[in-house]
Length: 242
Image 1: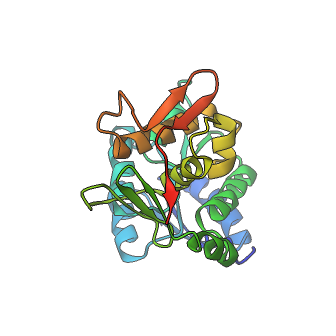
Image 2: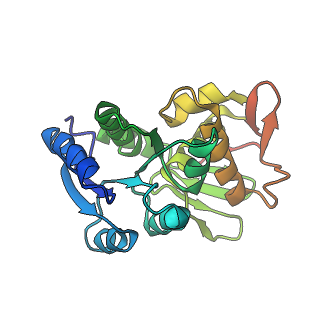
């Protein structure tokens, strides 16, 4: 695997021995190290001791606590999370993405697709040193009293308080700021943020909703990130580099 793709260790959260064995065999064959937890409590304990590079979660074996578990994981950091589940409803994928997953795979699981998604997350979440160098040269963006530092990826609201951003939210905000006041299509935002999928527009909508909740006074009546019907979304206030 290319050194730019820094995912090396994977935590598998599942209670099905056959599924675990299959995943471990394929992951280890591709030079990933694996750790297994058969309960959410054990998974969180492992996470606290040794933070993995990625987490694979089967959401079917403990559905009632699944959303809470994902929120617990996300509150502890920004480790990429792949959710695996039986897609019972059309919007299942959207729901789990909104809970904090980075990817959603339907059963029966394709181990080949799983490996592709992990590598995609590596490219998306861990940029190469050259990419980091180029981005840090821009230093920061200023807009409406907000400040986004590109070197540290820290966002400060006008009061000076830090606002945490996931990698997806950060990439989305940068895409808007670089576009100026131009409306951006969902496809353009997908490319800009490297969101993997089957041209799945709603995944962008979920990311937009998350970002609005952090930037807007009222996410239900957004003033910064506006919907442009038939086009996509537009960042509505000027931004400047500093």
